[in-house]
Image (tube, rainbow, N blue to C red; front, side):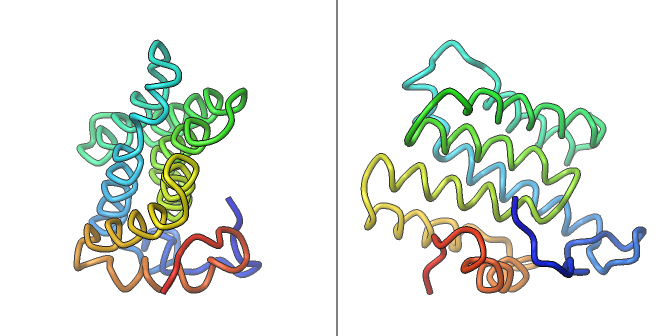
Length: 167
């Protein structure tokens, strides 16, 4: 994940000196999990016996419900990204999306990584227009409470790292 030189305090929780509420942090994690789950089939079609990306998405949701600690969700994210390393194309991007989603529990700004990798997975499987449609779909699914935060994050970080979020 690539962050700007100065971290955005809107993605730092209130208890750590930022302005992100716990509720909005959880919404970011749920949205990221949804982005990743939408493309999970692209991974599972290629590697049907590997449960790591699905487990990472489940860990993200479990963290939101308070059923696992942040470190457990983050570890599940790392395992999902490990599943991606030997792959190429859509399956690789889908596994990375799942890993990034689980890591939102640790660093809220991973939300953009989950969304971007999901778009990259769809692009790899279906082309540029499919990727643009995925970006639109993700934006439609954004909860109102975090919509402007995420859209602004896309504008700020798209050029430095992702190049998948189109206006």
